[in-house]
Length: 218
Ligand SMILES: [Zn+2]
Image (tube, rainbow, N blue to C red; front, side, top):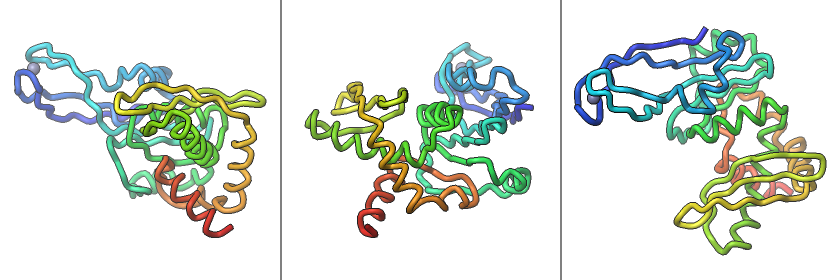
């Protein structure tokens, strides 16, 4: 079942305290609409019971898809590389085959869900995305702020990056060769990453550090 908590939220408009039910855990086995609640962001919609003001309330939520062997824990703006949650560790100690990730943004959460549903390794994907972002930075002469997986087919991969001060969308398609090379690096140097306990933050920061480590060990 989905887990809920009740919490007082201060309305940004009328400034009154409003008792709010917050869904803090979703499970695809029991909640048929779990996936759409995340993808249309309905789970973050909030309406003030006192004045009717509507906004989005970004709160932590754990998304579990045991059939596809993954759990994604969204904790807004988290920067830590790894988190452990004693209660979750105890509850899911028999689920060592499940990939556990922590993410700082809703977009990253959606990306992880899409990747793991397609059984794409996110370590490999992040290394690839990081390498391609350097290409994008060079070809656009702009700063790359973030990038997300869009699609993968037999011989190519497509990413969407956000570049420049106006965070303009930039689509980059590349040969799958880069992905295969990244996969070799992961197999050789980072195969133990998934055995670490807790929820791992596998993002652009991880990829940059991993590439640095790889280059110094080569
Ligand atoms: Zn209000």
